[in-house]
Length: 48
Image (tube, rainbow, N blue to C red; front, side, top):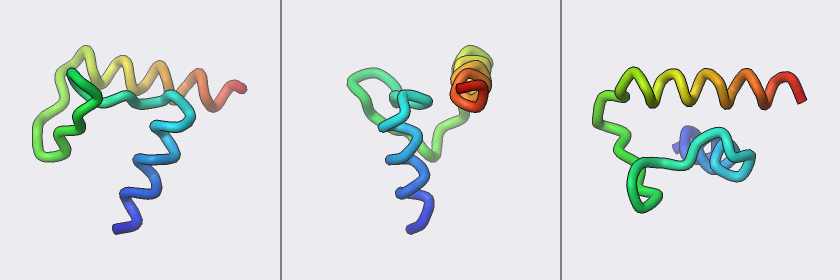
């Protein structure tokens, strides 16, 4: 259950926001657009 802490931390930092209506789909595949969005958000967070 430690992964939930990581998800909450990334959510609070604005790195992730979930899919439509702020729902998370952990068993779904990420689209290329979602992957790029995550990479860009992580890069931005690291540079702060």
